[in-house]
Length: 129
Length: 129
DNA sequence: ACATTTGTTCTATATATAGTAGAGCAAACA
DNA sequence: TGTTTGCTCTACTATATATAGAACAAATGT
Image (cartoon, rainbow over all chains, first blue to last red; front, top):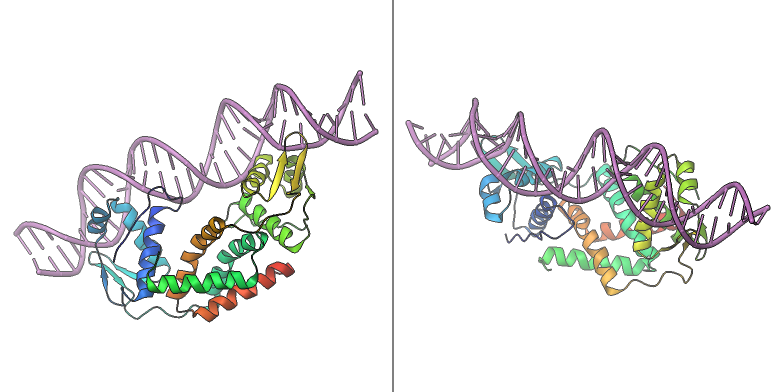
């Protein structure tokens, strides 16, 4: 997995890392049961602090994408990641809403927004950009 | 315009206010040239601080949705809001990407995500939820 | 002409988040 | 047994969020 962090971004680096790991899961580069680097090794690798990687791991654990086994290591949820519940879908919708709204204010049509999403799905699955 | 703020939300209230004003623009309740309440009146109306409303206005001004005329008032961009440029589209895509990614990790299909967006567009335009 | 309203600016305070830093702990592992 | 592991603790800095009050000068309403 190639991880690239933009230190100038307004997105916190612990989230940037989480996003890239999630993309790795989507692409199948990270499969259920795969182990992730230790917080120290990963931090040293990426040139960031141990606590920042730790924050990423706990963020992903709260989403139930990974399992943190104390004093042992971190693995991708071995049983696989279950399909989104209604509650989880609603959370995603709540996050999408203001962005879609801004698109509509800027006079993008429903079709243009849909096309945007389709393109993003392809890019994420192919690891582009 | 009916504004409702959730004080328990993890979304800052100055952003919640901005989002709801943007939805008002989409719905046509706020038209080009329409004036918005003064920071003091609006703040008093919503039970929040003057500076918070001021922050919302400057946030929307930076997006070029409104015009702030010093010592006079705030109006919806009288010339209308121009169609999104390529740069603005890319910014929206960058915001959408991690959310779409999370949907994919949770095994939502491209069609389900598209359906989500279509439903959101309808809800926003109809002022639902 | 005068009083009110306007957005702006300043200081101030409190809380939360983000990021880094170093140290020590106990359990797992080789 | 010695290393590695995630966990925890304190500590510090910077930024974001939200509130609060005061004052300013220009625009506005009467």
